[in-house]
Image (tube, rainbow, N blue to C red; front, side):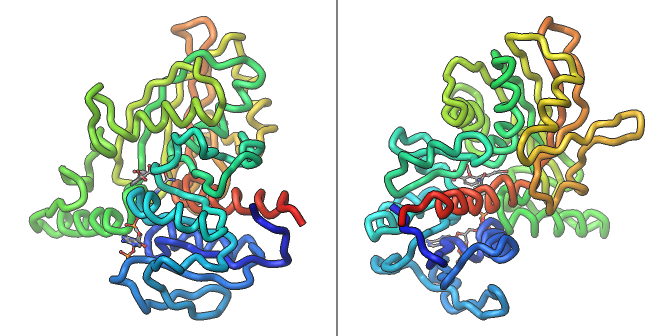
Length: 341
Ligand code: NAP
Ligand code: 3JN
């Protein structure tokens, strides 16, 4: 359990990666009360220096006793590292906010988006899971609709930026684009196909049911966060040559009919959701405008005329911020708000 303090000893595990880097930035930008920041990554990064609040902080290698004295540990070093090290941190008394898929579906671990299910933080046992980026931006929009009209079914199609795969994928998109424009041969290391000037309907591994793990994460995590296994969800996840910002097309079937104006009113009142929807003026969210923003943007809200109670919309959020680092820091903020004295 976290004890109330004026400031906290915070660790970022995976601090040299795309998400870890954003976590360090987010802690600083949001004036998180940090007494001391410890940064961890693999042995390869031992001794690298990162800046936090004008101080130079060395990156350390994880060891059995690394978590002694750490109040809050933000993990983004992949599921295998979380499997091994999150319990070590929790046993040392740290509260872990884990960005990987390792603990998300564990019934003893709350899976939290602060705007949607903050009360689930009350029953954590030392590890709290941060959902997948595509799930997070979807549930902040689904929750207020579900509350007023009960969602029966969702059909989601994603258009995911390469930063979701990490720093190497961002480097690969840049390199491939440069090579193509200079008539050089393209090399593919991160994705099975060229991502520059292409789209790839394949994110994470394929499963026996023909879906990818990313698609099933969206289905299972959404049900857990909304606490409703009756919602039927199906997803197709697609990688697109965008650096930052995931877009999603959502088709939502509700029990009660919701006219588009009512959906706009509901979402305008929802926390950290911005309705950006005036098609007559070409106003709708696009990733280049949403990159760097904290909110989830919604546009193209319209009736699904093929069914009685359906709505279509287009949502965009910054996958490294709300989809990962920001949601984790917001969880930590909620934890310190409710910490016991
Ligand atoms: P990334 O850019 O490849 O960074 C990976 C980080 O993990 C680096 O800091 C790396 O350190 C560290 N690491 C690797 N092996 C390690 C080890 N043995 N011990 C300690 N640290 C180790 O990847 P990313 O995009 O930041 O993503 C990192 C993880 O965050 C993903 O694997 C995923 O679990 C999670 N994630 C979640 C979401 C979400 O949807 N919420 C989105 C993206 C990522 P070195 O630099 O030393 O190698
Ligand atoms: O590809 C994306 O846009 C999001 C990627 C998330 C991710 C990448 C590697 C490993 C995850 C995740 O958060 O589900 C994981 C993982 O922890 O399984």
